[in-house]
Image (cartoon, rainbow, N blue to C red; front, side, top):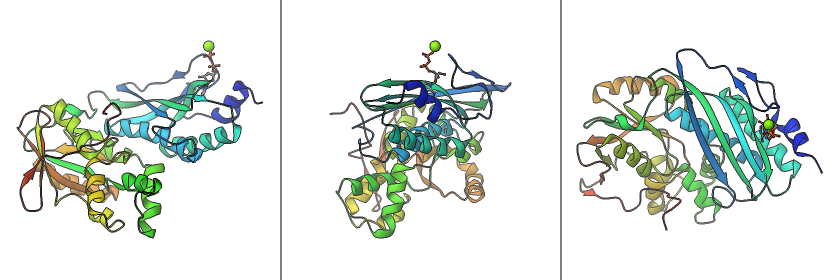
Amino acid sequence: MISEFDLIKRHFQRPTRHTELGVGDDAALIRATAGCELVVSTDMLIGGTHFLADDDPESLGWKVLAVSVSDLAAMGAVPKWALLAIALPQPREAFVAAFARGLFDCADAFGIDLVGGDTTRGPLNFCVTILGEVPQGGALRRGGARPDEDIWISCQPGRAALGLAQARGLTVLADDGRAECLAALRRPQPRLALGMALRGLASSAIDVSDGLLADLGHILERSGVGAIVDMTALPADGLARFCSDAELVRDSLLAGGDDYELIFTAAAERRAEVDGLAQRLGLPLTRIGRVTDEPAGSLSLREADSRLTIPVRRGYDHFAS
Ligand code: ADP
Ligand code: MG
């Protein structure tokens, strides 16, 4: 059986780009850029909760790092270093090799050095800590939204939820939508270029991991404001063309997690700049509502017939019963 040390050396030790000392010592030495703040975040993926034990390990490797990259994207930061803690029931080398392939695909795509971690025996579980940089004072935060600002979302929220419904056999998506929605679920694309470009333009930002309304709710709470989301403005067509179940489409859009799109707010005077950014990045950005001066966290939907409704479900909560 392969030893822990050989497993690490063989699969997790790679040349680095911007690191003094990486995997192999008692701790890593990283070179921080003068004038920048360090931005740090941790995410855990637990077998049975965030993924199933028979999920493709290569996709898991991509995803565990991609969700961390997404957190830094939501801060407007540049990810540079990651640490990986893994627990495995048995050291199945083929699994680890495939996992590492996916992880380094993502690391290479976003210029990240894996600089350390921990490997132990235990129930299948992955934990990534990511470090990045942002120019001093330039980070995007959840707390900056102000009444009358626009609320925007990137690309197409809801695809991962449709992909999950398909994977669980709860729906049958049209052939051309199946691959797209499963890819959104298994290989999410963090909106890193967008996050960086939103520095100085967005007043607040968050990535959608638990659901559009749930994560927008976090902005509203932290900013002490409310919001009205316009149902007719939401990008529903990108889901409806694969799925005829209108209820599922609506719920996936509003409360589906795991897409890692960015929600952000910006002053109405800056609409043209946001539209220009969408053009420049080749990434659709949709204005979906407006910040209000209602009590912190209050959220209503403007339906197609102009009525205001209160959403029944905002998203996923690990501790909700
Ligand atoms: P120590 O016992 O000193 O904590 P370890 O034996 O746990 O060191 O790890 C040896 C080296 O391998 C360290 O540099 C550690 O950061 C790195 N490492 C361990 N597991 C992983 C992993 N899964 N991915 C990347 N680096 C790892
Ligand atoms: Mg040590």
